[in-house]
Length: 377
Image (cartoon, rainbow, N blue to C red; front, side, top):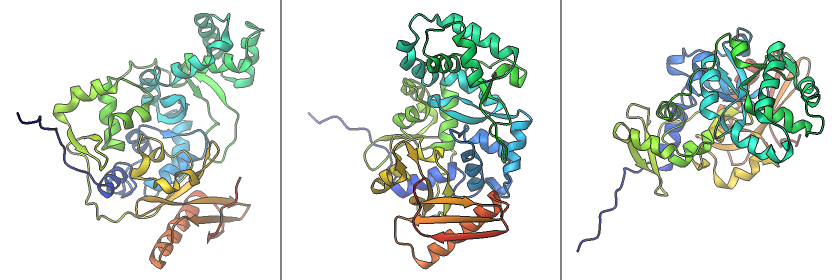
C-alpha cells in the first residue's frame, strides 16, 4: 500500500522571504511611489512600537520619503494618532481608529495576560470596582500615573501601588495624553480614557480574519507562530484555516508553513536592499517567531544588552551592526559599528544613509557619520 502523500508548498528561501518582508515594511522602497503619508504608514504597519518616545519617528524616517518628525507630532496633537497599550501589552503609536478597535482585539493576549501576573498582589481588590473608580478618576480629568496611584491607594491603602495602576491600565483603554510622545517636547505619562480623548466610543473588536489580513500585508509571508508572536494571541490558526481558500501557502527552508495574500509583493530575491537605520524596538525585529529572516542568528545576542535592545542597521536586508546618535547644541554624530566586513560601496551607501538620517532627525549644522565602537549606555 502506498504511503500517504505529504502536502508540500512552494519553497520561499531566506532571501525571498527577506525581500518580501522588507517590501511589506516599506524598507525595500520608501512608501509606494514615494507619496505615502505618515498616517497611512502608521495604519499600514498596524502601529509602531513605542516603549520609548523616539523610535516611532525613526521607524517612519526609515520608511518614508521626505518624512519630518513634525508630521507625526501633528497627528498626535490633532488626536489622529496616539500612544497606548495594545499588542502584547506594549505601548504602540496607532492611528485613532486602531486605538479604538485594536485594543479590544489585543485585550486577551496583552492586557489580560499582564493583569494575571499581578493578581496575587491585588488580593482583596474587587476588579470591577477598581475599573469603575479608575474610570471615574480619569474621566474627571487626565492624571499623571503617580497621581492616579495615590488616588487609588485612598480606596485600597493595603494594596500594592504598582499593581493598582497596572491593573487600571490593563482594565481600561487609556491613552497617553500629549505632550508625551511629541517630537522635541517632554512630558510625564498622563492617562486619559481613549473614548474621551478621541470623542467617540471604542469600536467593536475586528474579526480575527481582518487583523490577520492586515498582519500579512505588513509582515508576511508568515506562519501561525509568527502571527501569535506579533499579537500575543493564541487560537489564530482557526482564523487562518477559514482564510486558507483565499490565501497562498509556502514553506520556509525549515518546513514551516507560511501564509500570504495573493496580491502582496514578493520581489525577486536578487532585488537590491538599500541600507536602513532602525531604532530600538522596531516592529520589523519583534514581530515573528523566527527572526532569522532579518536577524542572523550569530548577531541576535549582540543586539541586546540585558532587556534593552540596541538600534541596528540593515545591510543587504539583514541586521549587520548597531548604531548610536549623540547630539549637542549644534552637532550630531552618528557612530556605526558593523558586525561584518563591509566593502567600499557598502560603507559609502551606509554613510550616505546615515547622513540622510542626521539631516532628517536633527537640526544640527555640523553632522558626522563615523565607523567605530558604540559605547554602552
